[in-house]
Length: 436
Image 1: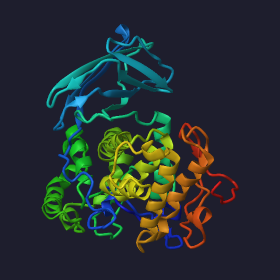
Image 2: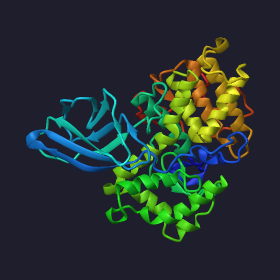
Image 3: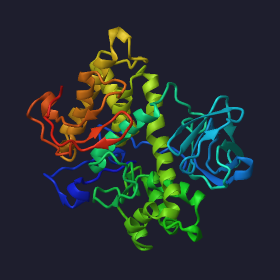
Image 4: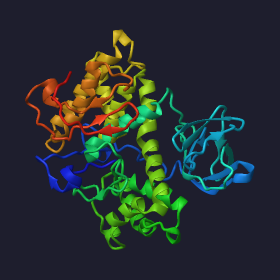
């Protein structure tokens, strides 16, 4: 699961005020507040694919993508995104598809049902205004359904998701920019912690990124992580058989420099898009999509609530997040865990989110390892108080737990950032800490 990491100012140059941006689901095993590891039961590479054809014939104004489902479950209603050359416009949707375009990125979604079976290939055609042949870049195929487990309610919009992920990235890397190249052994008993969601080599999710990446690119074709596969498998088998996080990295260290190879996989132009795609895909499959499903189950509809649940899932693991939901329900008089909870005995979403955040605050504050990250909860509480439910107003993390709930909480020391509704961000020149 996503791993906790030691946060340091200036690209982790030195430890600031003892802050530990910890965190994630990687830390759920054996924790009474997070009783189960998220995703243990999930098959490796459940939602993976490879692009086998990527052409655009300028004279015919005709693009062709063929992708193969290399995972273990069907891909339902895929979303296909690709980048075209600057100044080119995507047009003329094919039957069953519609598209939007932002800058160079064209995103195609289904208007009717489509399922791509395991080992099956699908041919996707598109058209643009370009009469010059090119190869589309940053091709991404995603599916919230991940093989038939489609969200029971709507997910976040693209911009809302950027805001939610940017907030979580502040806690993980002190910047809203997702850090795909990050890799470090923070000595937390979970091996190497890696990438945008803190995937750990000792908890069963880093191996899923590597399996996805192997399906897209061989070692001969630049995959620097392929050589670690046997070692990862040994570690993962121990994790699965014991249910305990695995601290050992010796099986990886005997092969090469893991942290260097992970970083180079993203920082090398030829492999960057594939490696990023796999991190996005696994993060969505393990954390985002299950969180959206869980929100729908309980009748939670607001973007702010979903963002808070997503961050908790990354921080505590998916099962840890569900345990916090149960605690919030019980505290509001729903000990029977009746779903949906919104509307049950007059419970409003604002009251529910307030209680959820308080329970999460108590979990963080009650653990000496986690207490220095308690301010991450306050950011969501501030947005609840000001009513930024759709994340449609620019927000700052200029708030600490002590600003919302009293001076007994330590200050975490996160750098204050402003995140705009479209996901862009900046560092404000001045600010005042407040929970309003």
